Length: 208
Image (cartoon, rainbow, N blue to C red):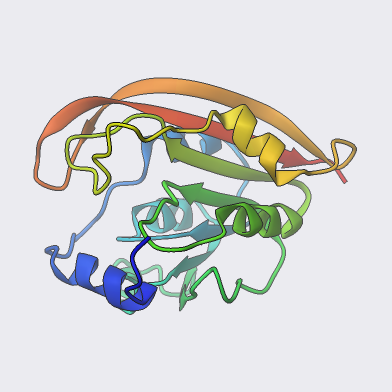
């Protein structure tokens, strides 16, 4: 693991990218959430903000968080420019140290992977506890290595969605695994290259 402070590392990542005028949402979010009634959503690791903007346009009130101040500032500006400033609250959090306040109908965590030290299991367990009854936690992880990934270790192992769910240790009387799948799609990287990748999709619902 790198010893670089997370905010410095991720500020550098986003500062090196050209800001997107209208970033695209993640495909697995649109598949899982389309048709669901809007409510309060929490976007963990919001990045460029495509998911937050997509949700807000569909009536969701979105709390979007990222460790990068650059990402948070860009999303705040984008939300205002798209007339969604009242629907998106962008906050900076190092999820290893703080977690957004509130109760949510949807928490989404897309590709919450990092080369830095992060207790991801604790973060996702905290996210499950932040759900209201009837709410859902959507976790989408890498299931394969894309050509543009920061991690090109040929020995890397991607835990299955069922393994991730088991690691959370959630009470099955309160939380239910609704989906645990490995799905393939054609993805486009930041440099415009395309490749077939595998997504590990985990959807957990809180029943009470």
